[in-house]
Length: 240
Image: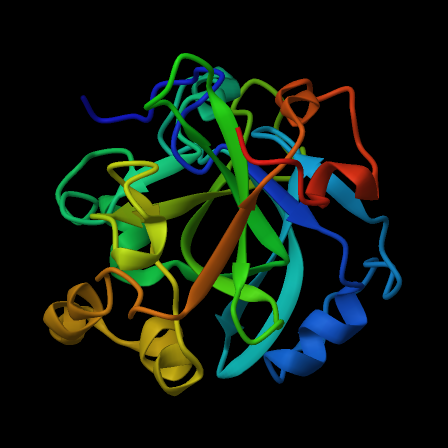
């Protein structure tokens, strides 16, 4: 299947994003796009179709801007499908119609404070919050695209993104059979600027994070309801 399936416990379907854009831009050596509040609005429960911050290469410079989470290809008839395309399998993104154009030339760095995954091995589905072991934001590999409503000439583009996923590394601890692709600083330039003749090198970055990159802890199941959004959602809960 080309698109990620939307379900309560889909891979990388919830993100915490509370570090201000000014700090994210500084981390990634990026300028902040016009109209973006440098202080931002924190969220501890970002779901698909909501907004993420992404850094793209714009004419040789890194720029941090807003992207709606759930990629809508430029050729789509309407934007409804974006609710399902919040993840893309890194192994096949270069060939899938929804993602191949973006994989070739429209790649993003998506800095987040952490992401949630649900452990489904027991009688109850238990959410876990994953963060970097060193305490910094996790920079995820993403793709973006621009869609325009052909029925409304002159309307502004809808700019959307997806998170690439790969096979799980040791830090996932068997909680899920996929994980988001984590990009390390040494690979930022390659990820953002590689041309069409360097796609093999880009594909080579889409591997599981090295052991010790991420840590995690169980959290309260109320993170499963997108209406809940507060710092308590990332606090450690008693192990179940």
